[in-house]
Structures are given as C-alpha cells and as structure tokens.
Length: 452
View 1 (cartoon, helix red, strand yellow):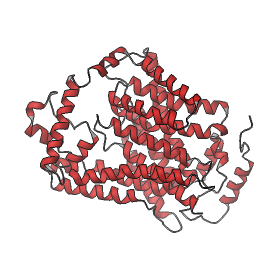
View 2: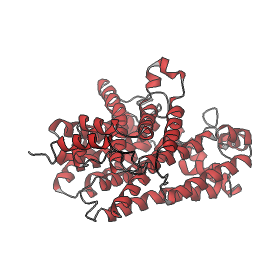
View 3: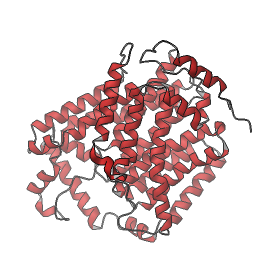
View 4: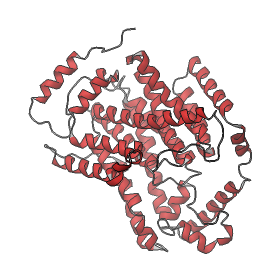
C-alpha cells in the first residue's frame, strides 16, 4: 500500500533553508515543514525536526524523560542532582531568552489553576497544623509552573506531535517491561501487583493510573496515524494500549481496573462505531476477564467488606465531616492524617492514619469548597476544550489533522483518572496536571490553526 507523503526530500530541503534564515519569533514554528511526513513517525524525520527545535522545547522533553522514565533511579550515580528541577529551570530561562515577542497562551484553565494555588496557600496559613501544610506546598505550586511551561512551549502542531509521542514512549517503557514481568510470572496474582521505578509510579495503584492516562491516547493516535505508518511501526504503536491494559490488570488495583472497564466503551466502540471495533471491544473485555486472576476476582467480590474497603469508607465519611466543619478552606493543606488521628483514633485500622484515598475528599479537606470549586472548574475545562476541538476539526484547516484524536484520547484519559482517583490519593501527582496542560496545548494549537 502506498503511504501518503512517503518521501522526505522536501522536508530536508525546508530544514536546511530555515537553518540559514533570520531568527524566528518564539511564538512561531522553528522549522516550517509539511506536517504529513512527520505523521509517518519515521525516527530520522522526527529527530531531524527535533534537533532544529528551541532549547526550551528540548528541555521540556527532557523533563518528561526525567519524570516518567526516571533514568536517575535506574543509574545510581545520576541521582546526585535534582534533574527534574534543573530541566524546568533551563526550560524557563531558555523561553525567557528566546527572541521575538513573548505572547502567553490564554485559556480559562490558567485562571483556575492560579486561583487553586492561591486557595491552597491560604489554606496552608490558616490550617489547623500550618507547619505540616507549609512543608508540602511544593507539591502543589510546582505543577502550576510545569503547566504554564508546557502550554507556552508546546505551542505548535509539530511540537505537540513530538511531545505527545515522547509521552507515549515514556509510558511504553513502563508498559512493555511490566507487562513482560506479569507474563513471566504466568499472569499470577500478587498482593503488591506490579511496581514501577521509584517515584510517582512505584506503587501499583499509581502505576495503573499512569497506564490509564497514556493507553487511550496511544489508541486514538494509532487510529489516526495508521494510514501513514509502515507495517512494523503500526504494530509497535498498537502494542502500547494493549500492554497498558495488561499492566492495569496485572497491577491488581481494583479502582484502576474499574476505570479501565469504563474507558473501554468510548475508546473501542463509541469512538468508531463499526462491526470490527465491536468485535475488538468484545475480544479485549473477554481477554481481560480471562487473564484476571481468581484471587483478584475474589478481591472484587469482597469489595466493601474487607478491611481495606472499610478503612477507606471511614476516611471518606470523616473527610466529609471535616469539610462540613471547615467549609471555606478545609482543615488545612495535607492536614487530613493529623486531624483524623486527633479526632477519630478509634477508626484507624492500619496503625496510622493515611491520606483519604479519594481525590475529591483530599481537595475538600485540603482547601474546602473554594478549592473544590477551582478543581472542578479545571476538570470541566478539559471537557470543554475537547468539545471545542471536535467542532473546530470540521474546518478545512483542521480536517484530517491529529488534534481531534489527541483531544479524544486526553479526554478519555481524564475520565480514567477521575474514576481511579475515587480510591487513591493522587491529586498532586502528575496525572491530572500534565493531562490538563496537554489538553490546553491541543486546544491552543487548534484555535491558532482555525484562525489562520
């Protein structure tokens, strides 16, 4: 089959001509090349484009690798420096030093994330235990910095394409190795499930959510890129959502497995309603049920009655009481365990009080109804951007471009986070904030292309 835009001769010529031209303003593409050759996902073409990009963009890509692959945890001598902070500082400095006008990306989510951080700051100062709150402030404001860097650096379709592909490759590193680990032990059940590298994805619950975040995006982009890809590239890209689902099943996190089941409908059926996709959905669901170990099925059967479920129900119940008693700013940022211990010591079933194992209870107790309002507005904004991109994709300038499948994948990924987040405490993990930034970046690129 002939692949569209199989040649790269024009791509190389354009690159050379741009390299000898005057400096390009920071808010325009560094290399004006046809986008279709990049859709073939050939490493040589992508690398040629990446090398010509700005330092700020390269540093944001480096941040993804440092945060998601964590080579500093794999190679011990690399762990001597705070690579995440260094790449962000380098990206910020490079962005500020870029020539040309500094036009910031505007979106309603910008206002809400700033207000959310203001509320968190107020909650920390007026907390029941302010010392605890102040010690954890970095966990919140750092995501605001990362958010603004992503949306203002990843501001063209080509940058978005490379950034999303790198995000998928980082996820693939986890999904390939861990699905292999699960297969090597005969798809057997273990209490600890599967574990990722030290960091945000070490525990099985958090690891599963990361698979929920990148799996739908990988599948929707596979649907889109398929006509452009070689046979082996097409197969490789299809393995990403498959291995992501395997890790969710093997990680033994009930909340994430429930989220995966919910994601299956819009991802496999509603996205492209056809007999082929219906068969694919049935096959995937049947395969997932077949591979689910008996011990894990027993865990689902005991949900609500086992000790872990009872403890979470107590956390949620008393968390709601905390919000009722402190409705404006909550009991204080990260004050939940200390406040719970002081008021309900008889309801601690595992020795010490933990965080509430629910993202909405966490935000409500951390920042009250004000924080919940800002958090809910940011969630709503991701859905509004997905709808906006869907409408804009009907325009000739956006027709048959990657923005619509990217927005759909990010939208369904957000639903996975919301459902799995009802059972774990992951508000200040990268899942929500990186997804929000990539969605805003997608909406910004779509808006730019629509107004040309």
